[in-house]
Every structure is written in C-alpha cells, then in structure tokens.
Length: 116
Image (cartoon, rainbow, N blue to C red; front, side, top):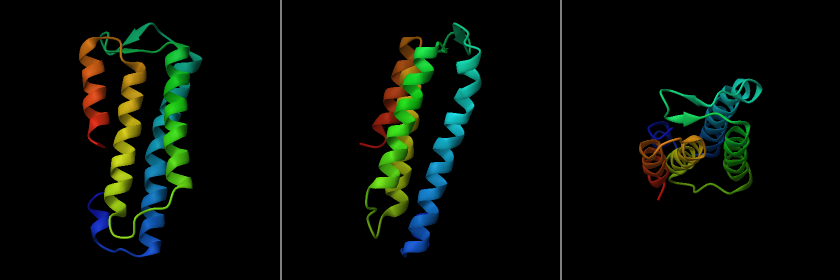
C-alpha cells in the first residue's frame, strides 16, 4: 500500500488503497473465526492466547479500524501512508489483544507504535 500510494494521487487510487486495506483487515478477521469456534488455551508455543474473550476483543479492534477506514476522509497526497499506518495500528491492536506473554505484548506495542 505504501509504494502503490506514491504512483498516483487521484481518487480512484485512494479508493483502491481503501479496499486493499479493508481486504487485509477482513482476512485477519476471517483468520480469527476458527479460533472462536475451537479455542485452545495457548498457541504458537505460548505467545498467543486464543480464548473467546481474546478473539472477540481482537474482532472489535479490527472492526473499529475498518470503520475508521470507511468513515474518514483520506488525505489527498499521502493516501498510501495513511492506509499503511491504519493497517499497522489494527494489526498491532490484534497482537496486543491476543498476547500471552511479555514478549508478545512488547511486539504488539512495537507494531502499534509504527502508526504514531
């Protein structure tokens, strides 16, 4: 998204980047659905917890970022940067919501801080 946003600054490119960012967030949300149906205490060698509360919280965060992508006006000249930063914020919140140890919590904070 970041490199595509530098090619053109017109409205069709901004709309394409918006749909691409929504696709990334939608794929992340779809990947969470099987974890809601069959939760296990910890996955990835204890890095992430997959209780139903964690999955619902992650879905709420992804929904909030998706709503922000749909509802807000995009800057004319830096649309690629804006969509990339919003996607990093959403995926950082996803890691924070599912972290099960201090290293995963730190990793989520680092990914989330890319958008600051």
